[in-house]
Image 1: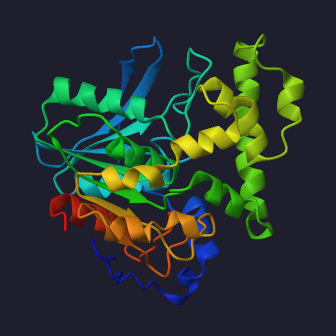
Image 2: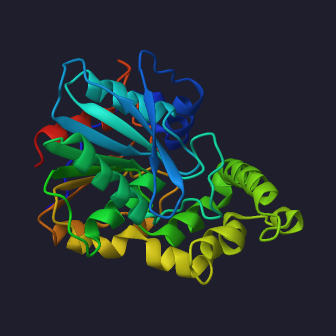
Length: 321
């Protein structure tokens, strides 16, 4: 489909990508969201935790499945903001906590990465069988958006209940995104990501001392080092570049058959040119791409407490273009 013209134009301070990205992480506080946790046992003996929130109307037949970004969880403000807005508009929602992201160390050595579409598939199959929703729509943020797009475009039968999907601030080309994150403009973000990822690795080392050593973790000075040491090996890839190549969602976009919206801001400092799949959107009737001038990375601020990405997600879920 043609590229969608965006009408998102925030106030002047939020036309700065860095302000848009940082502001909600520091100042946004979403209140009034009630979550009920459910643990799902996976086929490989591990588990994933789901955080359920319900619509203000009873017995909704519509469910939004929401997937967080790198080192996120179901309690991040961007997750709660979307959850609250959907609940207030008649949608139940379930936030997926990817493995090792729910506050409890998972049982297996592997964890999560940008390509764990098989885990998303298990959860959606579980929801289809147990809860019988008529309309399942999916939203993924950043890394979670890449998972959602990969899931939709892979060679697997999708449940008929899946009606639409939205992916927000998505690194459609993982190495291209990493290249941007490594630039001086993103130094603070890069260091923060490395700090959090290494903290998680030290925790895993305690549980798996024969596989992972403290010295190996200490020697990691970049995200790619971490992906070479852990992410790739733990999930069956040769190395980081093999992981980036096989898990980038861009290669799967041509196969998407469910109405899907990608919302990537032009001033997102985490995304390089390859993360804006213009040709793929033009050549797939089911794929819609909106590139607002503003928004940063998951930072589509609006002054009334409801962010632009939340409005666009509900609009697309209710009436895919």
